[in-house]
Length: 260
Image (tube, rainbow, N blue to C red; front, side):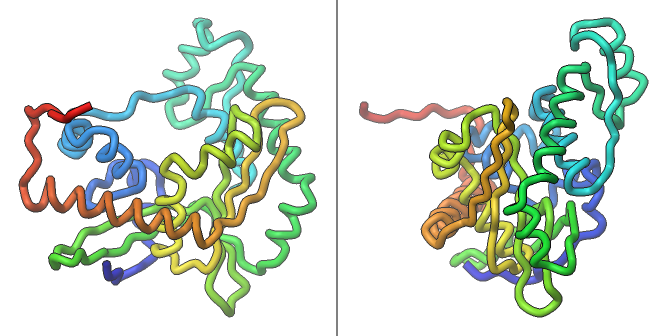
């Protein structure tokens, strides 16, 4: 597949605009397609959306505080089941409302990230650090169809000379060993390949911090094999999208009929 028109998409920098945009396919959208073409179709038509999960709040807060230096949390004493929490969610829809236990957890995780020398050494190797950048590009399939894709990088690192490096921050409820093993079997390889193409990056580093004490940190540079797997996954997803939604082979009312 041929990629063209890579660019930083400032108009998608705000999360609200990025997630509302459906003119370009994201890694998450391709995951919907892999899971269920029907779910993907309903999502694209605005008839289904991924349920809001409060456990994403910890990761969102860590991202905002560590990468951008922005703390948009609202502390509520008690639990998520309390009236105070529910009221705060209504009063502060653009903030991350947190019970005290999660609030303290985020503080501990961000503090740990700032104290890890290997992570600081990685960041110190670059003079320019740009967090939360959105980018778009166009991929042309072997059949000649052009499909727009997008991605939002956690941090783009550059020294002003060579190709940039991407840093992607993940929070994990599992151990580092479990995360590293599972990373090969989810959508992370495809995300890695997509983002490297979108941002024309030379390297991709996952930084992972666990959500349980002592908040272990792992830094994993994507290997050529990991990137190659992501390329295969991406191309398979794009060809599936082309077959079903460009060539109009999607059938909303159908069943899988196979031999076990």
